[in-house]
Length: 263
Image (tube, rainbow, N blue to C red; front, side, top):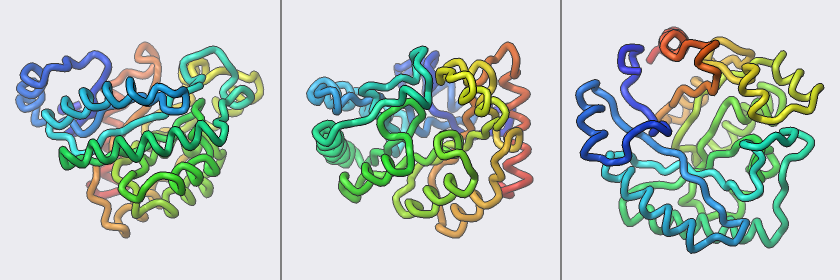
């Protein structure tokens, strides 16, 4: 990543979780940690367990110098299963929604003690995926909770550039972390036609790096710039490394962002 021109990273699954080990490795390469995925299970009623694990996760990120904690509500999630991503998507009951809102409000209070912010990662295959679900979530939680905006998941879920941009524009004041992910429309069409799972789609190439798919990122960068966005923009592209060489695609993404956003 450093060789490709990036200055930061989220915590990958293979990263050491000891700050005393990870920090020197990053500093040697001029890299920083900006976030790490955290799974919550409030809708399922696992409040105490989620809060306990969140506290440990927060302490690790704080030690690494991160300012945000990106969370995904994983109750009923099908993203790691063989279920059809569109036809078998989970939905929350009113009671489950209330558990989620109350749980996230508590996480925000805990994070504030470390000067950190919680953001919700809307994600395919979860109960907070669509525009309507994002709206409901954001209306139920307190204003000190933010949205992790993911271009790829917004486009994949809603099916158009316009719908993706509408989410971004609506929640600009409450977006504190951004994932830049592109989408291949032809793979999405195959996923829908064959009723494939999220993982099947990923393996076939649903996602790619910015500039290599259907999304036009120029209006994304324009909106963020007009808002004065100061948070991280993280390139993501879950792909088969045997097919899409990670370094090659990292270089491609960095070049596109520099040419398109000027950064």
